[in-house]
Image (cartoon, rainbow over all chains, first blue to last red; front, side, top):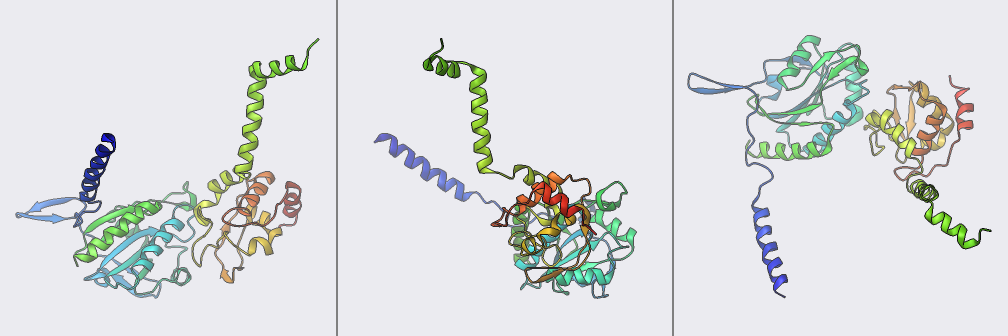
Length: 205
Length: 143
């Protein structure tokens, strides 16, 4: 009899403690290098960019003014991680379909093969809304360079499957060009957590 | 002269016989639980990146294997597709796909047969069996 009482109280206390633990923060940190200039903290920002999307429209930072967006780097003929990345991006696209404060930006790192018509077909097949999910191409070096700003790696590598070596991070950018979260796009649990973080960011917008 | 009970004692007390018996038993049990273990390993090494662990592919671009009518309607094409890839329009469950698939030329006939048998019996599929002989014959007619 005495034993059961003990366990009951232990259970009650643990329950209270566990529920007090928050698994997500209230607000997302600002990620990347930062430095103090003239007494003000200056955070890592996505630099100016200019690419062309699947509708042959120019896509620049202005396209995302006042919006949050998720970015990745991929290529259509990729035999390794890209299908999973795109599938994760599609999940995010569908989940936040009705919320136009969140956009998506996928950069193709195979500027030779992934032409605008091919990107268009790829996007249409996915059911991606044009003004919500931009699939862009442009100057090869510009796309490779900006990958680093998005915490990603993208480079040509004749020894890599598909000819390109790149990482599979999905990055969340806020309306001030700052990185607020990232995840491994090939890991569904990582993406689940990332989607919760997107919701947190949208709340503060 | 060895009696019945002597023989039984031999079996139970001889460790080699016991190990052999147990291994045979466990192998049988394993086969019941996962008869396509090798096909699954092959699938995870060569196919999962595009067709995914759950066989659903990528919407509009990479056809699913789970519940795919193509596996039934074009069963004879599967060995050629796996070994040499495919770059033509194909209709799967009413949707048209035209993204090229790279073949895996280094796969042996037994490996191709195992992959086909795995995907034909996974994710709710129940599509019948193929044999190495059938795969060999189908590979002779690849374009």
